Amino acid sequence: MRETLKKGMLAGLQTAWKLSKFIFPITFIVTLLQFTPVLPWIVDMIAPLMSILGLPGEAAIPLVLGTTLNLYSGIAGILSLELTVKEVFTLAVMLSFAHSMFIETAVALRVGVKLWVVLVVRFGLAFLSAITINLLWDGGSEIAKYGMMPEMTANPDGWGAILLLGLEKASYGILQLIIIVLPLMIIVQFLRDYGYMLKFSNRLAPFTKVIGVKPNASMTLVTGLVIGLAYGAGVMIQAVEEDGVSKKDATLAFIFLVACHAVVEDTLIFVPLGIPVLPLLAIRVVTAFILTIVVAYVWRRAEQKEARGVLES
Image (cartoon, rainbow, N blue to C red; front, side):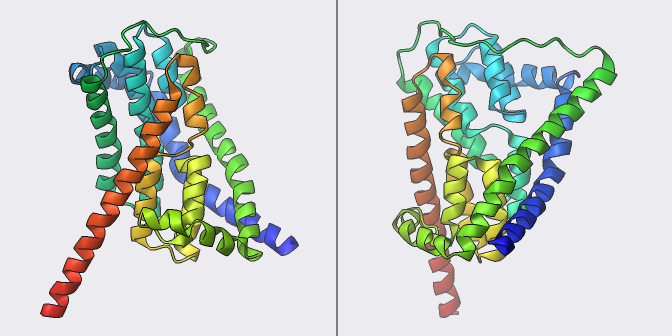
């Protein structure tokens, strides 16, 4: 038990260090950009596209905040606007698919997932879902009633205070990372050393088989579903390096988790916005299954075609 604890803590610290090298600078830089002309410029550039998505121009504000920072920033932006239930629901679905893009994309690259795969899948799902909702849903025209407003904080006074705020947010992000990842990696090490990982993988084999992923990636999927993409990537990194998870399985698992991760937290935080959260959860789960199954099928057919070509030559 002592050796397992030691190995788990070491793995947790190593994982936290790997992720912090991306999370700290990205959080710091994006926080600073909020107080420069860069973020308003991005909002102005995106605003003309909002009508295609059935959203008003000002909806670009929570969309940019959520995609560059996190869901909480996006929700704070939504709460500052008067929007209909349909508009809020559309933003919630879009942000569920595409949020914390800088940090989570950096994590995906660290795992070995191609950049174009991350960008196409996440932004593609976000925009396709918004267009679909706009075309198919005629309701939700009433003004959304927000059940809770966040505490307003004053803007920092001067660049010294802005830099301090950036350091504070980045440091808090690393602290939160350590608090979550360290015990997680200890639990994973315990499961690994005492044979529970194999039993767990075997029980989830039918589930992983459906989406075209091998059983040794099951812990990655469960962790991402419960905790989230960024924190689940800690287990994913270790799995790729130690458990023989292939780049293909890592990519398929990541595609699944892109559509459906942190299902409890990312669903419940939308409750105060006064929108139906069960349809939001259903959209994410169904999309994750369909998308991953389709990608796995296309990938398998391409491999079979390539193998036949090698044999014929």
